[in-house]
Image 1 (cartoon, rainbow, N blue to C red):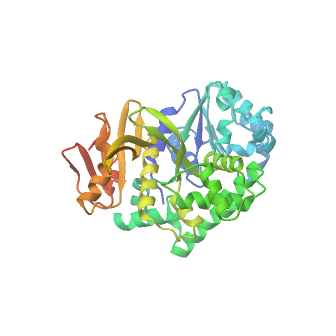
Image 2: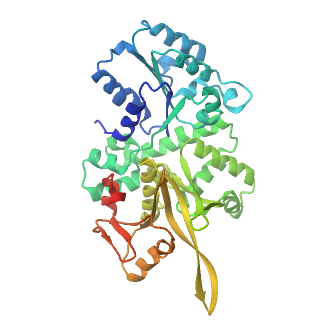
Image 3: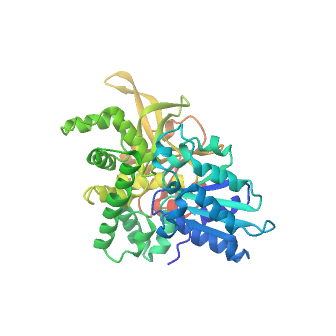
Length: 429
């Protein structure tokens, strides 16, 4: 089964032969290798690039284990480049395997892989692509090491617009599966509920948790797992390290300090398991700081952590909308609008929330996620923050189901969930 991932394929095609190292990042099993080794490989072949001119090295494959040594990796690639007048394309999959734990942990130790990649860049007929499942690979002064020659393409699990046609189901059934099992591509190949559940549970324990524990030398594996479950329970809620620490303390676990929790949160973000949305004061035009919101990159992994017992469609829908906005290339924050209301004859300040403030360049939108709008009171509640925003950028409420598109007197657009997810131009409707 071939799954179209055109948005990412086009991003790679646009960057082809641009003189930079294309760095494809994303959570494990989200489709990085498929994008590079299948979709982009086929694109090059269709253009007439000879197979021998595509040098593909999957470092997580035992047959290529020797090339986790950067020196051997460089020698192998150099030996494959036979003709200085032809273009060669180098694919290095899971490049973090060529970075030792000592190099990863100690910023004073130069990372030898960067030298290999910079060396390849100096060959004018070589175009380099690497994938990595951990942003530490990027964050260890990579732009300094590459001197501005790294170009990141971040890939996520399947968006609903990618998942739906591949599922072979009606939109409503596909949506239920998507919220429940998430968008890791292989989930579509698992034949039944038991197999899907088992696959996700196995990934959580044997891949994601194990990888984080080993990569960062975490001694309290149970504490990290508990933190992941706390965040999974609280998607869509404001939180910070102090609040999480209080949760641990309330459960009698006082062995995990707040600094440790802050580190654990950073590790989960660096591994692309969660993403953080900061709070933004819309009227004051400034970031507020903590608390923030955390969303799971994949809903199936989130549900699996909780043994599929905490299925709250309101919060899952909000998480899915967040992921969709990131997929479309927007910067996403949580909005706050300060207003004054009269209560018991007194004027008091109140902070109203806008689920998402998004922008891409000079374009901005304000978006609310609404599972249902059964009454006028509920409609008024959802649009209360939007009508108090003092600018003319578009304001949208995404409603669960197949609600028709309409716009009210205040200029707020209401659109159904399927219109939002399945039309790439939905924000401009």
